Length: 360
Image 1: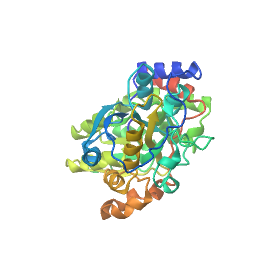
Image 2 (image 1 turned 180 degrees about the vertical axis):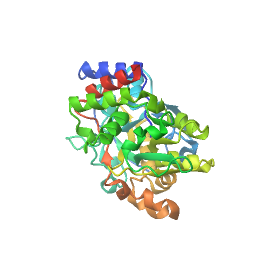
Image 3 (image 1 turned 120 degrees about the horizontal axis):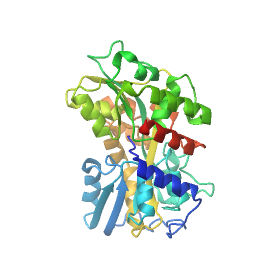
Image 4 (image 1 turned 90 degrees about the horizontal axis):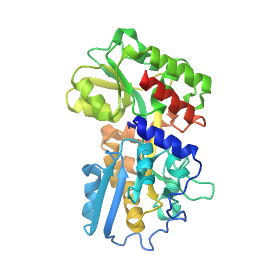
């Protein structure tokens, strides 16, 4: 999952965090679960999510099950961008949240705590103990709905031998034909740090962040682009302009479906992994429908759909309903050895470093 953060949203999010615990003016009490989870919902439900969360493939069954509900979707390219817009008055009931970028929402009180009793099968969901999910008081910031690994994607006809290390992104043999995620400050710095031999990229010192920053600046000619979205990365592969990139299994699946000869591989240092989910905003107007949507996303039918996109499911019961060729990658234990992307304690140093990389 690619997170696009342009400079303006970055600065807005950073300013919002530096300002301390601002108040969104929303409701900070626990969102009450519906008395009858099976009851039909109506009215309007507004979502603000990544584009893959809002895809018709996964949402159409929910629409069919709730014909009296007007589902309105809007998308963003990063949670920080979404947080900045919500803080500015954008209206939504449900928002995408990820373990590596939940703080902008929490700091400005943009999330209404979720009662885990309102989530079907909560105690059996994978990744519910990931950073940012549960609060100290037992309530929940967001409910995980999907996870996945971040590794290497390579053109099997152009890259030989196959890459097996994050350091291969910096192999001069492929200078000008490599792309790296550029919409997020976390991913490129973490991957570069691992390429430099650092084992735990989520615990970088300020000095190590600076070293990774300088490596990226010094390697500017190595990269065709710092891609700001999945679609940009896929288009570069399809045009033959890049032969090696970082990315998720879903990217590789999409490219192969269009005849591009690529494979996905986990680097020997370990892949990164992301966990994203859905939260209820502090200004949500249709809480019952919000719970209904979240419970749909963790249901076995919806999880089986997500699994066919190369994602690891959060509901282990869904693995049995996944087509055989996707079961291995759908199993949540398939990313148990990956390095979980979380928001570093010194994340502001990372943000500033990435801004320096972008400015050259």
